[in-house]
Image (cartoon, rainbow, N blue to C red; front, side):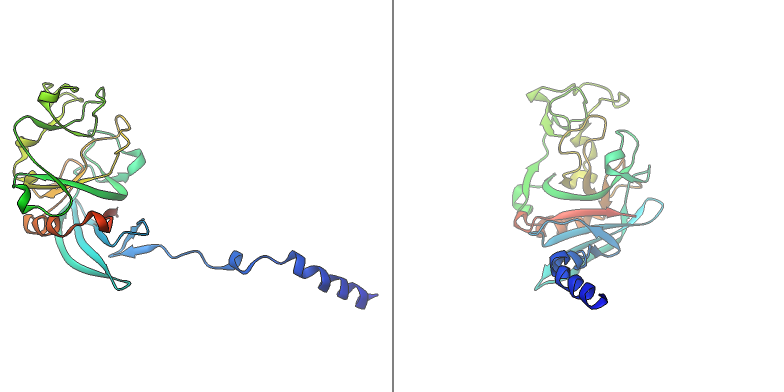
Length: 233
């Protein structure tokens, strides 16, 4: 009887077996410089932001070369927001917090002619240019000139819906790379999270790095490389 039962179980086992893929280990997460990177399959350029304490961070530029990630530039003098770090989906406008997570590096604006910039789309700042932070505007979290209308550019800086006049920050915005944070325009989550030239201290939520680093980075970034910026603790 036991022999018959054993034979029966042996016959059934193949039909109950799961495919080998079910037991395969999950793909390892990409971690560069201690920061988790949620990159797409075509990403070959990454700029990691590793919080080192207070409002300081290590900012490193990486390239994928022949299947290996290599650090090409790094600075320990990066800055984050005065409000610290917060999960991107929980960020609130006006809190001075920098959102954790991985975001695309989409375009650049600054004070130099386009011939000095790199391959990412570039816009030179001119009088009347703003980054819209007016929650009532359809242009929330977008670059727009006041002559185009569609947002309350005249609101004072103390107003929660005031927008950022870009010519007021010529030092920081000499070079500024736009991230994809809140590109979907969720109101009150925040607008204008950039990687820009450092000022004197912490940022209002952006990431900043010294001028030479930003100048070199702008000239290296390539839209074909699907560059991203992961921000970690």
